[in-house]
Length: 172
Image 1 (tube, helix red, strand yellow):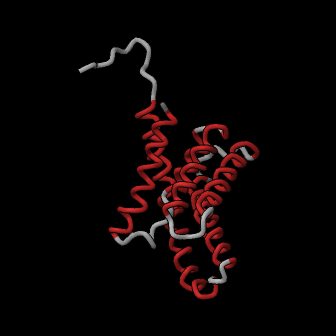
Image 2 (cartoon, one colour; image 1 turned 135 degrees about the vertical axis):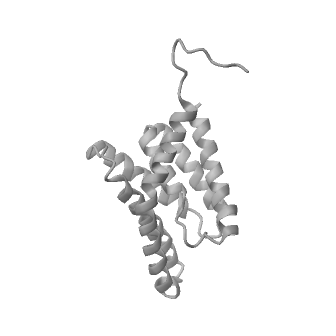
Image 3 (tube, one colour; image 1 turned 120 degrees about the vertical axis):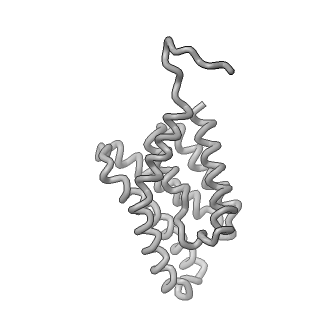
């Protein structure tokens, strides 16, 4: 049930990111909303369960974007690996570090996009505006990342929690 719920949330975020944000004019300003979601997947699921979900979302975003194929899949993969590394080796359970993890995930994704642009030989033309945009997205990620992570955790606890034993469910 948790996997189905988180798949639905991921699909909703993809739809929101590809339709609602551009319609509101926020697509260039706002960072990729799936970065905090991938971080949430890394905190919630094991690698065996989180990796296929992050991979599927990355492939979906790659197929919907007009960029080079593999950018989102690569960014989500390395973000997920960073989360598992932090949890496994550094035992980083403190809530103080997670705003910076979201910001590092945003930087990682923008680095992958810039590397793809360098390989396509389009980097010099887009480097100056990109620095300003990446800085704005980084600052926004530091401040909004913890709120989004808490929201995902609340959603997961609220809608996938098992009923307590001895508590009757209202069937109406």
